Amino acid sequence: MKEEIKNCQNCKKDFVIEQEDFNFYEKIKVPPPTWCPECRQQRRYAWRNERTLYRRNCDLCGKSIVTIYSPNKNLKVYCIKCWWGDGWDPASYGKDFDFSRPFFEQFKELQSLVPRIAVFNKNNINSDYTNHSGDNKNTYLSFCAFNDEDVMYSSWIMKSRNCLDCSYVYDAGERLYACIDSRKSFKCQFGFLLENCMDCFYCYDCHNCNNCFLSSNLRNQNFVFKNQKYSREEYLKKIEEYNLSSYKIRQKLYKEYLDLMVKNSIHRFVVSERNINCDGSMLFNSKNTKICFDSDSVEDSKYIYSVISLKSSMDLYHIGWGTELAYEIHGSKGYYNCQYCNHSADNTNMMYSDSCQNCANIFGCICVKKGEYMILNKKYSKEEYEKLRGKIIKHMESTGEYGEFFSPSISPFGYNETQGNYYMPLTKEEVLARGWLWEDKVPGIFGKETIAEEDIPDTIEEVSDDVLNTVFKCNVCTKNYNIVPNELTFYKREQIPLPHKCPECRYKERFAIRLPRKLWHRKCMNVGCENEFETSYAPERPEIVYCESCYNKEIY
Ligand SMILES: [Zn+2]
Ligand SMILES: [Zn+2]
Ligand SMILES: [Zn+2]
Ligand SMILES: [Zn+2]
Image (tube, rainbow, N blue to C red; front, side):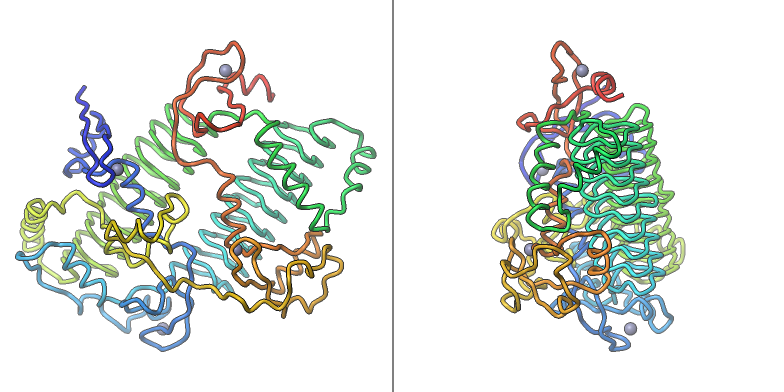
């Protein structure tokens, strides 16, 4: 077994490349990486602006559009209709490769010329304020949302209806509020790891439960209050003591909910269901994977984050739907044998390309649709292409560029606009010191509030339709926010008081409850058990963390 210790060229820490990694690099004919897995992950994060939206005009039809590109950026941006239309030709921006200059420099130049799509959305109805989304109706300020209806302020939400402030909700979630990592649940509020639950409030890790309140680690239960079983009547009486439409009461309940999760629950070392020979967490239906998080149906892959349906790949972030032999890619689907690419769909044999669709055998291309044998958006014959591609790779080897994903320094986004800002936050100084980018003009209005926090009605019953014209001030970041009509309907129906935080701070709050995408080697905390495991709970965390068998004994 060959195993090599390398020094990361970015953070200068040592990292290990294992024999199986070398086998993969050999198979797809790429050199081993020079950055450690963490830094590689960060580099991909820097290319994903998932949720920072701006208004600017389409550079073709002139209409005002919602886009992920701030107006001050030197980029051409087209609305979805213009971008997909025949009114422009990506090949008209084609450039000859200049062997006297580095590849990335030429790629960056091309980037400023070729029109980019405003947002990555498809088949949405009345859902302008979304990104990385498709097949939605009436979806508002939600991201990574697919097949949803009437969903607001949520992210990574699929096949769900009437949900607000949710993250990682799948498969027919309905009437959910502030739920995280939950499936097939109905009418639940403040839940984490719920499955097949109904009318559960402030619950953690419950399956097949209904009418449970401030409880955790339950299976097939009903009428459970603070982990105590009651009769239906007793339970309802307990619940009635809380006026759920009051903000003050909700604040107390939220604190109790956080306490319940941290102090009074058993935590399985990872969330892993129906997997064979896998490590990682929030992982489902997978086989032979390593360091794999927030993913489903992954096989023979490593360093995988937010992926659905994948085989034989490494170093991916937000990929899926039938991808194989992919390496160092962000945001794509339907790939075969593609490396070092950003946000594209349905491509084969592609390298170093960005936002390309239905292409085969292209290299260094941007926003090409149905292209073949193209380099820097210029068309070649098959023979010319292969010869030139080989020459460019040799050139990139000599400049030290080959084998590296696009640097954050040529990302179309400031680091603070991207998911890097959430997963691996850096200060402006740290970002600039690395030669990466920072966006000073991120959206946000301040100081225009028309109501003080203490004047916000405590209960939702006291709120009238005038609230739709009120400007609020977030009690965390001080940014202004407002309430939209669908949102008010939701709060009234579900008896939820008005929020005192802006949607962004609410997202961050949910984000903080989820575990990091990292593993630590630890021992089971059940007294007398010697089992060890790789867990996403850091050793210094306060939660009680059990191995699989101790957890199962305790729960079932
Ligand atoms: Zn590193
Ligand atoms: Zn347009
Ligand atoms: Zn805020
Ligand atoms: Zn144990």
